Amino acid sequence: MIRVGVGTPRQTQIPPLEIPRYGEGRLSGIRCLATGFEDDGPQEGSLTALARQRLDALLLFSLTGTGFTRRGGGAAGFIQHGYLAHLIPTPGEGTDVAQSCQVLGPLSLEDLAKDSLLDLVNSLETEFLRNFTAQRVDSGRERVLLVGVQTQGLDDLRFEEGLAELERLIDSAGGQVVAVARQKRERPHPRTVFGAGKAEEIALQIQTCGATLVAFDRELSPAQVRNLEIQWGVRVVDRTEVILDIFAQRAQSQAGKLQVELAQLDYMLPRLAGQGRALSRLGGGIGTRGPGETQLETERRVLQKRVTRLRQEVRQLQDHRERLRHKRQRDGIATVAVVGYTNAGKSTLVNALTHAEIYAADQLFATLDPTTRRLLLPQSDGSPPQALLLTDTVGFIRELPHTLVEAFKATLEEVTSADALLQVVDLSHPAWEHQLQSVGKILGEMELAPGPMALAFNKVELAGIEAINEAKEKYPQAVFVSAREQTGLETLKARLACLL
Ligand SMILES: Nc1nc2c(ncn2[C@@H]2O[C@H](COP(=O)(O)OP(=O)(O)OP(=O)(O)O)[C@@H](O)[C@H]2O)c(=O)[nH]1
Ligand SMILES: [Mg+2]
Image 1: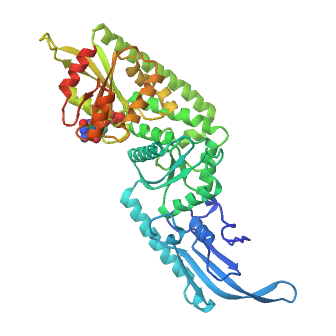
Image 2 (image 1 turned 30 degrees about the vertical axis):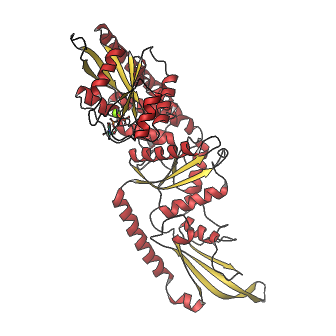
Image 3 (image 1 turned 180 degrees about the horizontal axis):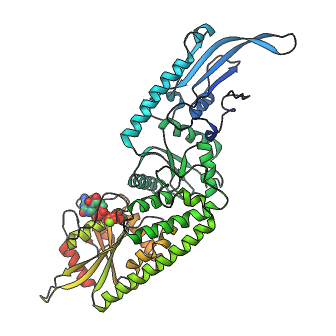
């Protein structure tokens, strides 16, 4: 097929979704011939177009500016030089377009004609494919470009903390962050988040770093996702989708799966209204797990019915859990819910205290399902030890997506109905205080049963002395522990005994 575009290579770009072989780790099958009067080779705009569309090659001919008019109409001119530009299979680091292209020239037409363009394209493709396969074998993971938008009122520290956290989230979801793009903007553009220039720059970055997914550090509107996917030709997800994806992967129990599905449908339903996704959610990867495309294709009405049924099941789950709690109350044993930011070490601490074997790992949202274990607290006056029930549950995160809070009501009731709370904070984390505040904020939005709260600073063996001193000064009631090294546990037990 020959397609003729009039204008500069940049102006005649074909939208990514219309390119025949887009995103297959090879070139697009399109060669671009362009002419111009200047004789200084392809400019950055043309090279950007080359990289963006993964053109097989770009041939630029400079004209002499002299010529003649043909009999019968039409003008003819003379070619001065030719330039041949193509992509390099192993581009350098960074986002500079020049590093991802090679430009040959100025060449005479004879020189240009000497080598077969087809051979060049074939050998380039072989090399591209080799790299592509190597990348795939190397990781088997989604290659993610992280995008941060620093809006007005978001200071540098919080912004960077948010990006670092998103990187951890991606990692926990099984993806690999290959590049990060940042932009300051008063507020996101309602349709495309960015202006045209920045969107173009990111498009290029997607190509140069071989990203298969773009993840934003914020929530996006359905229209924004759609517009950006059309423009960039890769899937675009927001922070909520990444979190939902982790939850979908972690859900083990029937109850967990039920709540995750409800959260995902709640998230998707408003996004289905008339505006489908530009790109398929089929085929695996972050943001594709869960109810799946087949269901998305079916009527909204059917999904709505499913949501209603899921809600009923969640209500039954709530009733069931409530009966269990009543039984415990009748037995007269107090419950303490362990709360805290995700990865603070809650499960490790409950394991250390009760010799339980709850799954604990250096991942965000390692725990989804609540586990309750019995803990005996020795009494200082020598009377028989006091028993309490310690419940480990799902961790919190800054701006916990609303759909999750709603869907996880049954699980979170373990927290809201507990007699007391034990908040665990990872003191070795640079953002420990913000994390502590985020947890406080989320708890503040929940209807908690009235009861005391103890504070435990964890991972003290990793924490810096300044952090420890600062925490001691600001939170004099807190206990300092290391769940991993099993230090401070007796003090913590004594603190819990006083609490109840
Ligand atoms: N160095 C150190 N690491 C710890 C300590 N406590 C927990 N960890 C590690 O921190 C990581 C997270 O621990 P988890 O117990 O899974 O944390 P969690 O709060 O249950 O996290 P989620 O369930 O994901 O919300 C694991 O790799 C633990 O080994 C500690 O006292 N010191
Ligand atoms: Mg846990």
